[in-house]
Amino acid sequence: MPRLPGSPPIVVRLPFVVAFILSGLQKPLNADDAAQSRPNVLVILADDLGYSDLGCYGGEIDTPHLDALAAGGLRYTSFYNTARCWPTRAALLTGYYAQQVRRDALPTVPGGGARGQRPVWAPLLPVRLRPAGYRSYYSGKWHLDGTPAASGFDLSYELMDQGRYFRATRHQKNGQELPPTSNSDGSYSTVAIADHAIDQLSQHAASHPAQPFFQYVAFTAPHFPLQALPEDIRKYADRYRAGWEALRQQRWERMRSTGLLSGSLSPVERTLGPPYAFPDDIKALGAGEVSLPLPWDELTEEQQSFQAMKMAIHAAMVDRMDQEIGRILSQLRQMNAIENTLILFLSDNGASAEIMVRSDGHDPAAPMGSAATHLCLGPGWSTVSNTPFRRHKTWVHEGGISTPLIVNWPAKISARGEFRRRAGHVIDIVPTILELAGVPLPEPNADTSAPELPGHSLIPSFSNDTSTPHKSLWWLHEGNRAVQMGNWKLVAAKNQPWELYDLTTDRAEQQNLADVNPDVLETLQTEWNRLTNEFTELAQRNPIPEPAPSNKGLKAP
Image (tube, rainbow, N blue to C red; front, side, top):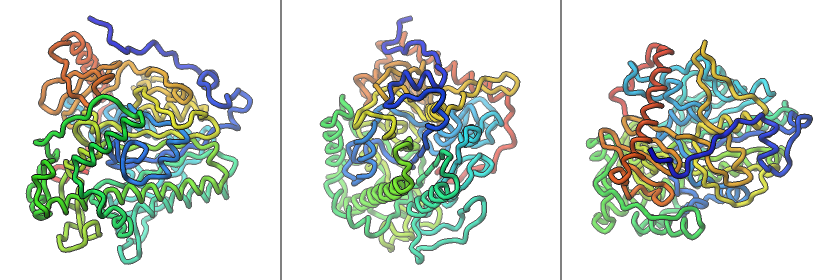
């Protein structure tokens, strides 16, 4: 069996202080001042944001605040999520793969574990940070089991209306129900999420200035429905009339010119539509909607106009999210906290090809992007958002699982505007933050069945582009499956055969090498089966509680 190209060396987990010193950060810590130098942490999560939507990742959308964070910090080019909203949130805040903690399905486990109750040995990050003196705050979309308060957050704003931007009928502050909001009072959820985050930070500065904080901001944008403030939509009203092929090519040229990526641009998969079929919904959206990424010049004038406006609304949502991030950063500056705040920005999955109508329905006579409409990006523009990769949210090809990751920490990261090409995953966030906080990694425990955290700290990559310590990265979602070892990736859509790609030259997954590298295919398939069996055995040792109310028949978020 051949040695895999790019196989990582054996990595020994070093104690916190030694690892910090060896990481080459600007001002290494020692044991005496470590407690006084623990950083604040701000994690910002976007929802359904494509790999190339931000300006600093090749997009034409105006994102000056995130671009500035990238220019003053690091951009990771090969960072990964789980392909879906709730599994990514579980992995991000527990440090485990979602299937290890009953938050996504395993094919042979009764009940599957999808959206189940986490085991007691898998608390969220705030619980682990509390003994180190951290205060924790959360604002935005939850999409996890349990409650924020029971999960260690000291202050929280939980938005449960995922299908509304202009009115919130279900939202809570610190566990208490808030009155509904409406379009008439000027409410818009992206602004509200930032408002609550800023209020939480302000309270921290007033009442707990000597303690470090963990602030988690989970925006709903730009998840469907496509709804945006009119002034933001006007800014982009004419920007997308050239069509999806032209915009995709422009993004790709910018990505190559900046050195973000090299290789090739994947061809558009013209016959691949939404992952779930709702033909009645597509019909209800009117003659302008199309369910396939057809050539732009084959669309009718009505379809071109409708599609261009959808992307304009998507851009407006991303633009507004960036504006609100700017306000949060201003709050950090007012607190004199930004220098020693580690800021991480990423997305929960790739852009979505879904097309559906839910929540308050769709009024075709209402202005596009208003509260009365329910529009989705669809596969045409999702293909653009995920440039240069294949496929979309829910698939585990690169388009579904590749996320931007921006890392900024003025006090400790001296690199400015550099790329990091090491492979990473959302399971790496918890060990990174725990190491910086001086919190020991949880030990495996046979009595409770708690396994070792599968992720690795990103700290060494803050100073240089080190090779990945991961033996492998693993994916499974709704039958879509993948594993990556070194430079090789094995991937398959549901009920389809394995495909094998060399990611050093083919991130666009165009040259399937499965037939010419059977030994490599066997090695990766063995690894995928090993981890799947390991997670299955873990689930069977920890019987799954009674499942939550079924989502069968409902439209997937």
